[in-house]
Length: 267
Image (cartoon, rainbow, N blue to C red; front, side, top):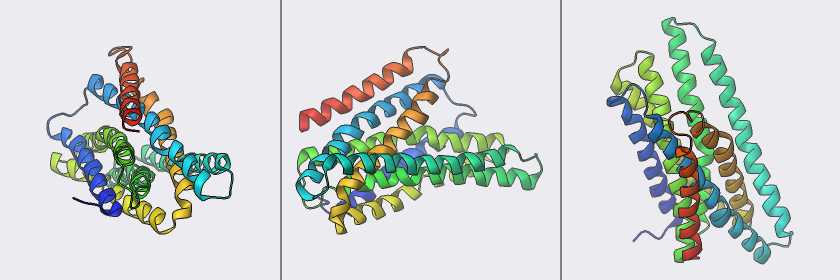
């Protein structure tokens, strides 16, 4: 059995990368996505991430800050949470800039290549804080392998993994429309997720070797996850409501309920 939190974080994010690859693999069979399935997955992932942000990240951050730090727990949790959200906001602004540059390009071969590079780069950049969130969650285990702590880390990885599926498709399918072969479209789509294991190892190592950062790091990961869920997943899953008005909404409710049940039951 694996007991090293860094190795566990690596294995977990190899799993999230694999789900990215599965999403990218849809380009082999389809040139467009099934909006009903996509909306439900995005909604479920949003619900999972919102629940995991509190029970798996913020609550442990507050508890650890109260017992290990002289700084008020509310200050550590609030500052870390806001830093995580601001960090991802900055990343999103960079992504938006590169996407805008890509959309401004014409259809010459060189401009198409630039568009492809910017698309892959933007999704890859977006995956860095997600990998850090998983790494921090597993790094928080330290030498303690209580079922509730392990479940908390797994729940974070599950939430990230679920929303990686449509991200993989979001890279590979547009590339296919640009004229790339299915093989190349799949390759670039799955490659966008490989940065997550690297970021996860760094995040886990950071909180293990600098233990005083752990409460802040947990709150930081929570802020990043909430921003992803509220700013990206929920609006996206509601963007095609004509498919079924309440389908994605029930996905959010279901994801939150499942994660809440597991976290509270095991905690």
